[in-house]
Length: 132
Image (cartoon, rainbow, N blue to C red; front, side):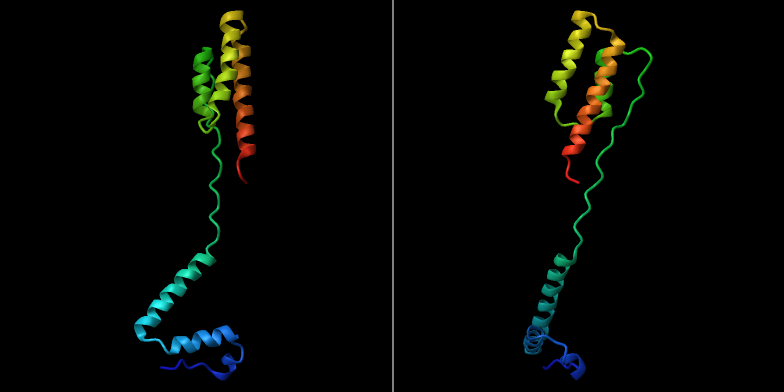
């Protein structure tokens, strides 16, 4: 069963396209359907746009209450900056600030302000490390 193509169209075919059409013409109906399905599969794989990366999560700021303990502030900031992965680094810096408050009497307002800055810095560093 030969495939009919106009002379004008045949002049624009490459040698590979000519060969493919010739082979296609010699196949049974079932084989043609299989070949078309495979060609559609290959075409779908090559024409797909690369998936757009999902947007990076943003912090969900929780308002700072008027009266807050250092531990409550750390919990609040952990919830606000839920996407941060380097918990060990955060624990190190937050424990230093907690110790300064408890053992050295550092002002709670200053400690919480610094905790907020630490979390914001960790977020900025995390964001800079993410693929664009």
